Image (cartoon, rainbow, N blue to C red; front, side, top):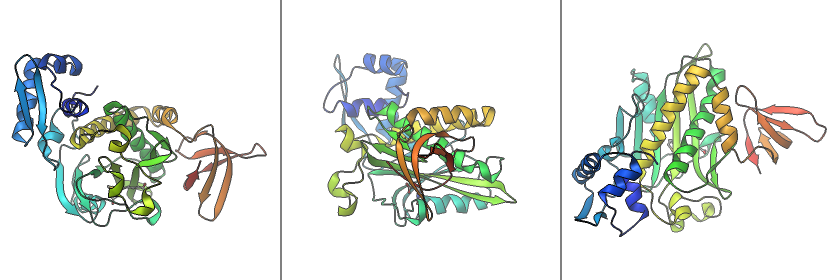
Length: 322
Ligand code: BTN
């Protein structure tokens, strides 16, 4: 379990006391560290009841995200260290883009409680109501050719999927290239936008949207059969701050691995989490429809599909139907 999931542990056991000793054992941190974390959370508006010989019980949590809870227990060096938390914005992608253009360093993160013009892949809009989701964008400045950008999309999907699996008991899987599904319903989407010059990346903006604490009635009618949230799947709220820091942790670790060893270890991790591979798929890519068996990723992140005649075709963009 991640270091920053003290809150999540208490949230998973609503109304129950957890002793400082148990928390320290489960999180592999000292009793003093537990006490310090509790105090920091109190400063950020969380309320705990502490009863001797019983332990701590969470009484109240602030409805809003706050930087203290996000930073708490986060061990990244660069990602999320420059963090901008907004109540509302059009799209966190735009906010990061503005900062990138005036020289913000890699790792800058913008989180919004609400987006009024959240955008998804292929020109779609992204439903981003206030207070219940994670809507955030991270600035990356890889010194690479534009052709590598799809690999970063897959890397981001792996990071989000791993963080969800670590923090919850939810079996999220990745649909190529970067949708996260639970029981066939979409729980998260990733939008990677790149700005390049002479085919070299100037910067990328990794946008991540996760439906965290939505109830079914929070969604517009037309989405209800297609999407789900972590709360709906787990039956309990998930702490958004803990989720954000777990994602940043995963992202930085995977990004460093990618810089050192290239795409191959990331591709293996992606394949292990994929719900697309080894299945019959139909792909809509522009006006083209590709049908066949998804057999693997190619070295640039494209999906290799084997058609009925046994011929292998690599697809670089499009929508998979499972
Ligand atoms: C998709 O599946 O279509 C991608 C959705 C990406 C949504 C996120 S939310 C944070 C960031 N800001 C946006 O406007 N979009 C991305």
